[in-house]
Amino acid sequence: MGRGKVELKRIENPTSRQVTFSKRRNGLLKKAFELSILCDAEVALIILSPSDKIYQFASHETIAMYRNQVGLPESNNSSFRQARTMEFGRNNETEELRRTIEHLEMRLKNLAGEELDMLGMQELKQLERQLKTGVERIRSQMGRVISENISLLKRKHKALQEENSRLQKRVSCFYKLL
Image (cartoon, rainbow, N blue to C red; front, side):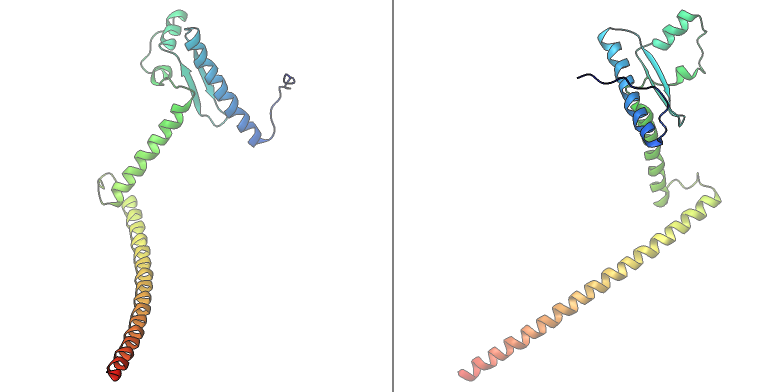
């Protein structure tokens, strides 16, 4: 059973539209990749999402070959030249995650008191506030843990005292029997 013909019109539901975009984008990128491998074809594909993200795929030196064919001059500032070849459009996400990791690693170093010379006065004050808040939370948690440990030790102490008392009574009964 084949699929019915899809009516081509804008999808009004934003969630459905985004899901369809993601699925079809991945399918299109996959087909471009497959075409380049199976047919040894030079393929270039650029997709601009509604949120202005760029997804691209280019096999080998496709952009340079295109520029030569059309007669465009080679440019070092060309966005095509700066963009890396992306397989299935995942490198854009990877690059974003890499930047997030770098930012978090720098933040961690700052929280550890390292590489502070790159921070301005406002950032240093914000860092100080965050550290004070963190220290207060740590002290509060330590207080709770210590309090729980004290309660536990008191219960154990009471149980040991009762055990000691019980054993002393047994020993005194044993001595009376002798």
